[in-house]
Image (cartoon, rainbow, N blue to C red; front, side, top):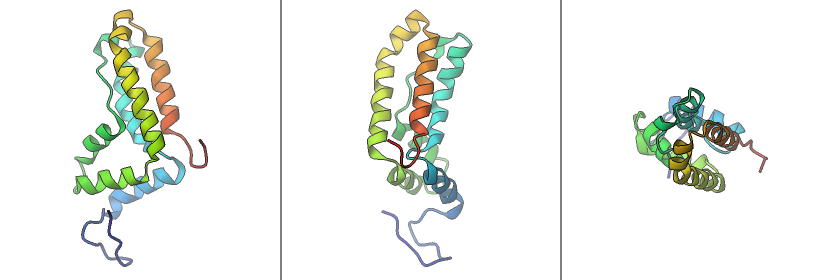
Length: 135
């Protein structure tokens, strides 16, 4: 839980403003952290250039954020801050689709199904870009 401080005062256990403002800017418009889409780019590029065999299992929403938060001065605070703002229903929907894709991945690779990967990534980006006030 984040502790609120007085204006201009940084409380113990509070994420610094330079890390907060981009997160806040994202969540003013979106219900998920759109930056999680970066975790899908290797799969998309591999499919587009015909290297489906190079595609690895995709990360769940929380896995990507844990990795991303490790670059923060306060990794746990950063992770908690983003997760508190993330819509839990959409996080589960995202993770469910990622699990299904990962289960399907050996067959996708066997068939070299580039279109399936591209369609999946586009669908996931659309989910990540769900606007506030949308479904």
